[in-house]
Image (cartoon, rainbow, N blue to C red; front, side):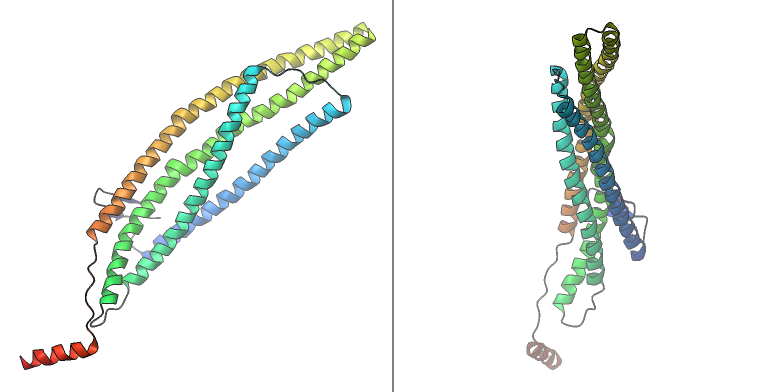
Length: 290
């Protein structure tokens, strides 16, 4: 995609003058987008597998050992619920935005082809159709330049910030959540073993079980504190950084819409009248007589 800027009148300047270069760049953008989507799909599958392993392990421990589950920290429960809401919202929005962006890239490719074809229309005598679509092609070229700049901004200000927030910020807290869940299971196991040791009244077993429980409890408390801090930090990033990107994109979108309107206003096309061959001959004859 050529580097272009949109002014208030909807005109654009481009660093590329050849049609071939523009098409090649647009194709490169599409292939890069496809590759990124495939990579993200594989990454997401891996995360789901890791999540499933922790869940399966937790269920197996509960079922086989019949271990009582200790109470969760209410603040952690609240933090995890907020994390779940944020995760579901951002994943859904970012997937739609990525699909929309790729669809518009595809649309832009066909818009270039159509504009070039219409501009190259051969005009014959008494050909209002040819004149009209040729002017359409000229206007479409200006619209395509504006759309190319808009797609560049859409990727920078909307697509990538959402995916970065999803794949880095949210997933970082998701990993911490899985670590917490695993530690919580270890803590419940340690509590259960301590109870069994106390039932046996074996002081050595009781001491070892108590030490194990205390160590896991300390780790669990640290993870609880980390979870609450990281979820709050994630919320702040969403409300400040990500919101700033959304605001920037919406401003760019307004400029894009205005630039399109300006181009259409400047390229109003008046349809010329078609003269039927018989009438044309009569007019020519009259002119010759005059």
